Amino acid sequence: MLNNFQEFLNMLPLVLIGAGIVLSVFIEMYYKKSESILPWFSALLFIAVSLFSLLMVENQSVIFQGMLATGGIVNIFYFVFTASAAIVSILSADYIKKYGANYGEYYILIQSSVLGMMVMAGARDLFMIFLGLELMSIPFYVLAGVNRKRAAGNEASLKYFLLGAFATGFVVYGIALIYGGAHSTSFETITTNFSALSGNTLFLVGILLFLVGFSFKIAAFPFHVWVPDVYQGSPTTVAGLFSTGGKAAAFAAIIVTLTALFSGIPNEIFAPYLAVVSVFSMLFGSIVALSQDNVKRMLAYSSISHAGYLLIGLTSGSADGVAGVIFYLAVYTFMNLAAFGVIAIVEGENETNLEINSYTGLGSRKPLLAALLSLALFSLAGIPPLAGFFAKYYIFIAAVKSGFTWLAIVGVISSVISVYFYLRIVVLMYFRESDEVPEISISKSGMFAVILSTLLIVILGVLPGSLIDLISSFL
View 1 (spheres, rainbow, N blue to C red):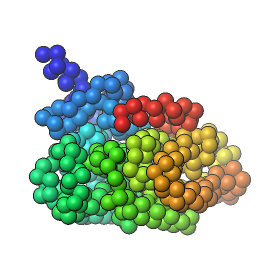
View 2: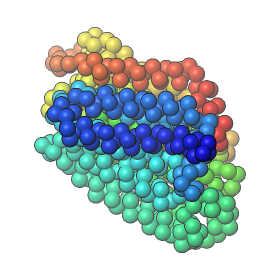
View 3: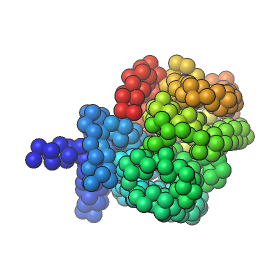
């Protein structure tokens, strides 16, 4: 009885999100002003689950006959997903009214996508990965076009759906071939027999197809083509969720699937693929971002370059590299949400104020807003002592220790390039004045969400060791 109760406690984060979805559906069905209740209900639900996940982080277990893990790294991912969703829900309370999509089901879709992310992070079987992937992706396709009256939203939703379905095909074929080679979909079996299976061509092709499918989900080059249009056409808060929770869930799936590579087994088979994709993602994302005038497209290309930095950690094939990736994902989540949060506040009705020039003179007109955006951009650029610097530091050090010094050097070059397009906005805010002053209506809930994200960036920058040590203790 005691073991059953402990198992129930361990899986409680999933149960709470599932119950929250059901309760949200009833609120939407039976309460006329559900859209005014659901953002705060969702935010409180996500905050409660994120805090509970951290409290239960030490309680590791495998449930559902070896299909799902809880505790440890899994709970750290739970915290990242639910904290990002809580911030997005608070940001959305006023934003979606301005965007013209003030529907209660918007929050139900966010809750459903988060449940999918959590299933992916805890998966210990390939079928659970697929189940979580679809549970996350289908709400994402709908969220991209949540306002069906906007042509750009419809286009973003359709592009995301078509290319997402195509990428899912790679994942499914990969799973089929992995099963054909390993005769199992269990990660434990695959990890135990990985050395023997690494000589099986069918198995290796399956892993490669699986990686290609998830390269789409993490927005890595050359599977990035959907990112700029989808981020630009989607609601700004939704684009923030895509670039943080969605990316973190995809990396979680790659990490749990390739556990064997980070457990001392030689990484020569997949390191070349990961390294090449990493280099092209970093350089392509940083260089193309230089020429962008739309701030959401700029952050979209920035997201591609950050996928490249994260792949450096996976290429290293070590526990230090994986710890660096998880730390980076946590930090990237909060600094990117802070940036997207400010964009959502500045954005006017009918998607105005989205050009980079719209931020000219913001430092004198809205000093707090400009300061928060500057902190987020400095952190994204990797400027010390903010959390973004330490995130890149841990990744690069892991690469150097594993003999990939050249890859770390490319990462530093890409970071130097990225400083220009991040600081360009800061220069416009503080050192330029504009004749045309766009009207900005400050959202109190939006400001609260941005301040919360920024505080987490500063805290993780001041105390990076506390989180990286916690992550390392479970690897």
